[in-house]
Amino acid sequence: MRESGYNPLDLVNPYIELSGMTTFNFQFDLVAKDHNARAGVFHTPHGDLLTPVFAPVGTQATVKAVTPDQLKEIGVTLVLANTYHLYLRPGADLVAEMGGLHHFMRWDSPILTDSGGFQVFSLAGMRKIDEDGVTFKSHIDGSIHRFTPEKAIQIQEKLGADIIMAFDECAPPYDRAYNQQAVARTHRWAEHCLAAQTRPDQALFGIVQGGIFPDLREQSARFISSLGFPGHAIGGLSVGETKEEMHRTLELLNQILPEDKPRYLMGVGSPEDLINGIRRGVDIFDCVLPTRLARHQAAMTRQGRLNLMNAAHARDPRPIDEKCHCYTCTHFSRAYLRHLIVAKEMLAATLISIHNIATLVYLVQDARRAILEGTFEQFAEEFLAAYTLPEKAQA
Image (cartoon, rainbow, N blue to C red):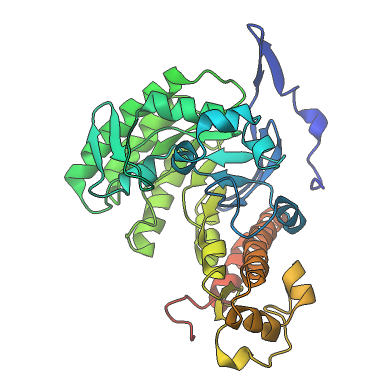
């Protein structure tokens, strides 16, 4: 359901015929602002994304332990798939042969793919970087592969996601010399990615790098935003820097990145990071955290994390969160979930994943509602005051 004040008739026909090929007008409508928090609509070929939005991660064309129908029931509108992993297995050609990711994984809403850059650069001791790309060993069988900007775009075009990423270099946050080189390389590769793109029905986002260094971040943001991408991603955060450093970087980028393009903070998705990111102008988030925590017996709530292995839950008839309306919380007790964990039943991962994803999806939906109502700052203050950070939470 669309909120009051949004009229789809205001949008020009998003499909345009260009040289015999159907393209798409990836328009971002900024609907409301409350201080720096933004509520918008990003139009894609597989539906509109109401922002801010959280995307669970489906690394290998599946959100672990959760079916597409279960994601739909939660209210998920965007999922992320991983270029590096799908390139290695089952292969981009096979995915294309099967009709692309949407058909392959039976997901008819928007999909975002990363470029594989972060995964490649995480292969310490298994890759070699040069000015034209990266040569690396597969973590699966040790075979040798090479990614260039052109190759990353080619793979993503075969996968067929709605939103794709430019190939970039993610550097350690505190190494200034490395970040200077990585920023320059990321900028060159961004231009190569734009030149290599052939599918006009995919939104290619440029990525801003620069570690924790304000001058490098400003330089990167100004250059990347000058290239005309339909959206911008913020990379190289939540990789070891402090929360304060991440916040300062987002505040700087909020002043530089254009207002009329969506902003995607890559790989960030704890509840407090969502609220703090929205507070600093971010529109799109993704993270493996909700499903990863679920596989380690941890439930996410608006008050903090809950360790369901704790013996105190053995006879607890309450749901994980009495205010949550997800399938798990409306049907099952903490006692039952703990029993599944102790018995090593697969259903435990599914039920806790459903709840954890729902917690984040409902949180950004409530944040959007508060932005539209002009009450987001109060909403954020009340949430952060009630939330216990994981390192302070009791087991």
